[in-house]
Amino acid sequence: MSNPRILILGAPGAGKGTQSRRLAEEFGIEHITTGDALRENKGMDISHLDLEYDTPGEYMDAGELVPDEVVNEIVKTALEEANGFVLDGYPRNESQTEYLDSITDLDVVLYLDVDEDELVRRLTGRRVCEDCGATYHVDFNPPEEAGVCDECGGDLYQREDDTEETARERIEVYEENTAPVVEYFRDQGVLEEIDGEQTPDEVWEDVKATVEARAN
Ligand code: AP5
Ligand code: MG
Image 1: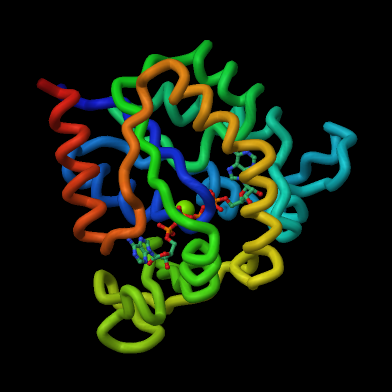
Image 2: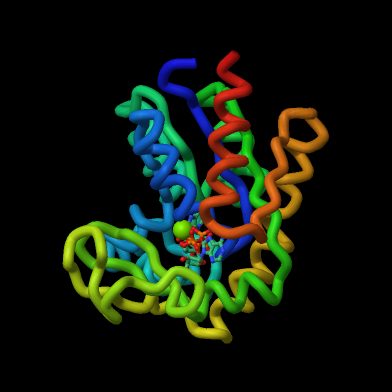
């Protein structure tokens, strides 16, 4: 399969971003991630929508979902520009799932399965490069030099929503809104379940093999 269209599902901290970066590199496709896109636009004025908050950042720092109107538009534009993609962080509820279904076809749907306590450990220890976006973990995947990116030498920072309190809130929001999306794809018989509790390299072996198997 050239330029596969891949969806990667999983709870906050399951390793979607970690594996998506490798998929994008291996298969030469775009990494489309609503989380990163929204973090770059945290201060965007969405007051015209007349909803709970006036910027995406306020939803994100509370661990809540940003409104569908905002997110659907980001994904539509990104998908139109991509020749093959791995979609990470979307869809997160039923209405986003229906919208996605109306604008594209998927070749592979991956699901990274990880237990809740492990998710919290991963989120609270995460560090991200402010220049290239590479992701580390203070214990599970530390950089060679603390606070410095191995790939580009950039500074590492902790995401504002990676405090224990907000991480738990995000997991709750996931259970309520996004777990049914996983069930939807499972019911369709297209869900490829991966044990996300293995090491990053072991998860990658399973992810890569699964995508390649779908290609043949
Ligand atoms: P988003 O950025 O998508 O966050 P998330 O879904 O909570 O997922 P994360 O990025 O936290 O986890 P990940 O699975 O990518 O894990 P990672 O690979 O980094 O969304 C943030 C916010 O934006 C949302 O709360 C919401 O407000 C808003 N938003 C985004 N999309 C939206 C949408 N569609 N609709 C509405 N609102 C939306 O790994 C985590 C850590 O674990 C790292 O430290 C990593 O090094 C480590 N790690 C990874 N794999 C392993 C492993 N196998 N073993 C040990 N450690 C590992
Ligand atoms: Mg991520």
